[in-house]
Image (cartoon, rainbow, N blue to C red):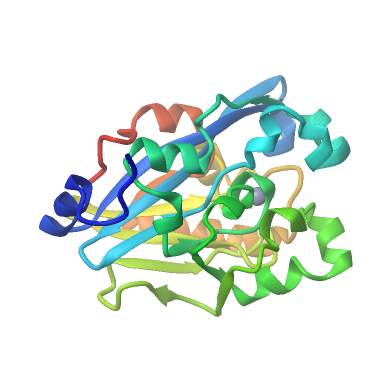
Length: 268
Ligand SMILES: [Zn+2]
């Protein structure tokens, strides 16, 4: 049974400090050069989403892929679908992952959207009561025909009448500095990442501003980038954060993904 409030899950949430639950809304396989320009062969990667639990509420960071990609990817993605092999089991979409945690997707009140690509925004449709916090530049780009085409946005992923909160620069979700989004432009016009302060230290959920450890260590960019110079600036900012002790959570790194706990085990 689904309960929005007063569940054992809620009681755990209010006892401690901030924790993060990680899950993969499916996996993709693609030519490696798509995501690392100088690489060859194919590469498999997870499509992560994260639920951040703070004593004052929850923030979902990204919403994964639309469940329709399980059965008819070409219908949603057009010929882009041919670039990917999609592994997406029933129940691994964002609604299914939340239900597994005994959470009603309709009870999610806030989504921090890194950006509006189909791998991150496809599940928004199934979070009907969420306020979507997105950088103003990203939302604007996703509503301009030329930039929709250039960035391969799919408006059917994000145009569902949600309450949209556009932000510029950093956004502090709970007013205490523990969950803060910040611009990491370059991958798309208005990409943002999320800093989360856990008892064990700070983590940085980079999303697509840094696909892999290799992206950061060697400044090895993807083949498709909206603005290379902005993306490099974002990567240098991640390097600074790493030097100051933050743990970097790479956006789609299968090797890194193996090293972190997955829901229902929290990262804390
Ligand atoms: Zn992306």
